[in-house]
Image 1 (tube, helix red, strand yellow):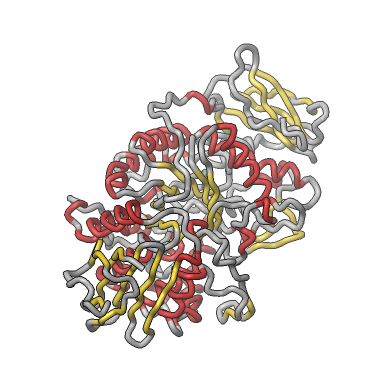
Image 2 (image 1 turned 90 degrees about the vertical axis):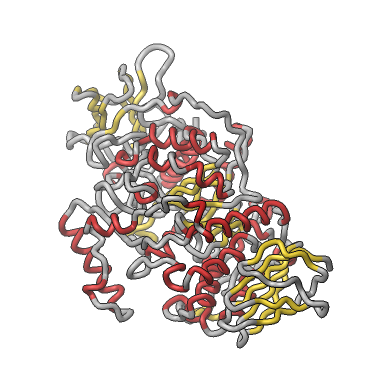
Length: 600
């Protein structure tokens, strides 16, 4: 039992007992009466002794049995801790025994150090949009050389298709994807290919439709506000139960589905003025579970704060997350490759080579300086000598950075495949934990657009109007903005797989770079192990990342790049080029790159 809240790890519909009835529990502190509706039969619940706000009943129930909780004679609602919602978020829950999957592949775990992540969306990775269909493509990812598949959110949301960030049931799995059984099959198959699995989870808000948590208790508070409205109640009255709810959800996915890690969406919106901070409590619980299970587990944050506290270990006063996404690196790389300088690219586009050098050596571009986009100082500096580079995830493309463009256009479409190959050098052989977005490895031409399947007409129209208004302010004609509710928008976003992916030259390039990283780049680098020289007007950059030298010519004319480490061995090149000259200069064609290993 949780000593603070009294809630066990399987509150809700408890696991199958060895004998006797199954326990059903729910936290509903404001209710005067709670009834369990089990297979259509009402059963009164009693207050749980010594556990304020908790209700309990026992009854026999087989997996698949529908159940819900009626508060004060209102219509029955699904269990907030439902593991399965076979009829969607508005239907009743179904009893699930998480331990029933017959795991075929033993798994000792795969930690974050040395990882290469691959982000994918189950609903568009294949046309079928299911776990089983995605699992049939896992051999491709194993051959590519990535170490972990990072799934975008899979918790239930109204409708069939969506990004998943409007989920409303943080313990369950979207039924159209295959439900919890489908997720278990996917993870098992990934383990059979030697791949770890990371899941993107959303704790900072629930979707605008189907969220029934406020009817059960004070899960949200007006003490803080987020872009989605009232904040999750992490530091107000009854916050201990709310914190336990989200910590329990995270641990359940890691434990029951044998996941290796979680990516936490927008942790800067987890507003908490108490101690310990919710993130520190969560990271401590995950570390404890890793010790209990005897396999590594990790947490990756998405954070807009540019604050070292996010990944600083708890013993040093931080929140103890193991890594965070690095949007500053993405923005600098994107500005350098595309020339874009609008919106949040404004500070990066003024001197993109310098911005790229700054993020490669210091991770954060804004580390206390003024941010033009935010119109205020932003961020805090990192200690380069003490900060491992692996605490930051580096990428050229993500679901956000593609899908939040008006047309969902990818980097290869914006800047061309040659420059996409240059981006791969800094992502895959650069200092940070690398991540690819599905299809990036072969330069997929399919866009990835914002799509929804809201069932309420008013909400659907509000989303359409909001999308049109957002991009009209940036000069786009309203008729050019894809309708998120149009099924064709999702269909356009489905990957079109090449008949023979191995024949794609970009895929061969990505495989080579991943192999070079694995063979030559130690996972123990610190930011102080990275040095960068560049020429802004001539658009070249030389980065020394541990033992590797990355030489990039982004210009449309040839360049001679000065190398500090000579002699040097060419490990990978985008174009044919001679080895470095006797004077230590590497001559590269336009839009070309090379990876070398030399001596100091």
